[in-house]
Image 1: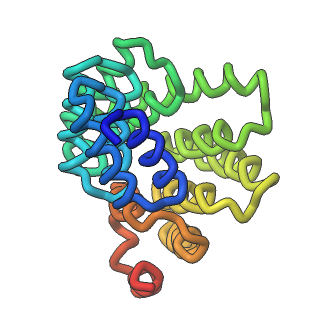
Image 2: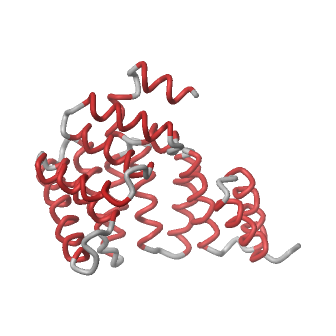
Image 3: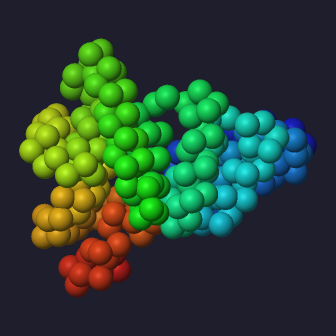
Length: 238
């Protein structure tokens, strides 16, 4: 009962079951037993992200990187700042993740979003989205049907205003698993960035009806313009 790993294991188990309050409680108990363990703060921060508790997530992730800087924690910190609409801090966190060696396509796309929504770094946003595409295309040589790669390529092209390419990659992503709720969520974001609000709202409604996280939806700047629509408000209320 006084060894942190047992609490950590149980917290991870609850997290996989989407029992986030119970998971958080276990990670807190683990931290009490091992307050210098950066991974425990990272895990608790991840739970807070899933719950939409951005301030709590930032506090835990900042503690994690103070103890042991890691690209994954800086990426999560950047994403949390992005959700909280603190775009300049998001930029700093994403850039630090890159400095520490994170060269994944997700990090460059996240940096592009932070630049874009800051409304002061448009050129840097486009460069970051293009860098994300370059990394994703290199990885596609291994598996051209990878759903995650096709989704991020679709999203980045939409963010760059390249509609034909965006919709082609979205079609590829939807081919093998058309009922995937995360793909529906990204379809909503893609159509929103392409300024097609009707299609965006339809995909967002489907994502909600298929159980996509409402906290994630409320945290996404791309979707702010859709949340006031009656059909979306109704779906979010159910």
